[in-house]
Image (cartoon, each protein chain N blue to C red):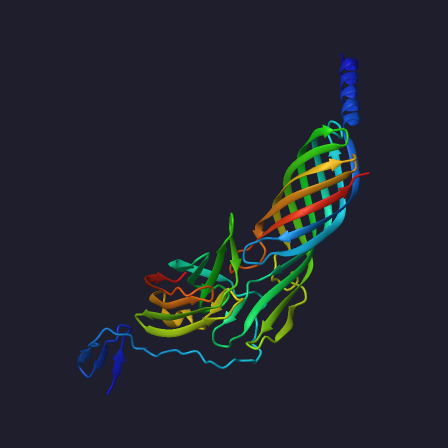
Length: 167
Length: 210
């Protein structure tokens, strides 16, 4: 028996062309982050990863004087999605950046990938690298953020972003 | 007629030479890096400055140029890896030769006080610099690793940078100058297309002009 397939999921079985019955992603694994701290040294590049945000992928929650914003994006020197977190405190004339820790649930789905992840970012860092390769997800995807919370208040935010273009 | 022209030209040259005042002196500055993609960090520069006043020392147009041994310190944002739970940031400490050339105007306020404002280009020639990465684990233990010992030689940073400089300040007691200046680079600090970061600094410069 010979099996010949194409990118759309059609395969040739004998003299017949058989297509998928449901248009669902063929990878629906749930990616969970290990709770254990990893103390092994990582191989660091000579330059910071950098961050590039995607268009219209920000979610802001307000907690009194504090405004916390998460933005979906990618690292520039590397191949992974990332999230930028910023919290600003309203001062007399300006907004001052303050540190905060963050938690959220991120669901990413594209035609070839489905990913669900609990993201936890401790106080201090502003960019959280997700370790999800760009090429695994593809250039267009949808994302749903739920239970976005910062340590600067109790407000919970959720949002859905459709057709995000990877830059 | 030829004699007359010669006398006129000679007189013009003489009067122009008399009007121009040339001064030199040491200069030192403290600076604050405010470029994007990096955190605010202090730096310093020391060197010599030359100034030429076209009319007189108290008011009028002037041009100045400095040669400064320049230290800049830059630190990246903190990056947290959601899988390894490690937080990392990169620090770049660079040494270069900074040469700003400014043209400006002096306003006389009193016998001992002038206000100055000037703008002009600068060129920054990289000499050497280190690149370190600081890794902190979930327990708060940090480890520092030197990644590169010469960021210019190892082609991480562009060796030649251009930009512009704008400054305003005061000159008091005829010899002392204090400037607050802002400079912005036109060229990318890092080589390659990855991170777009241009130098951007605020300086406080103090000079003594002989």
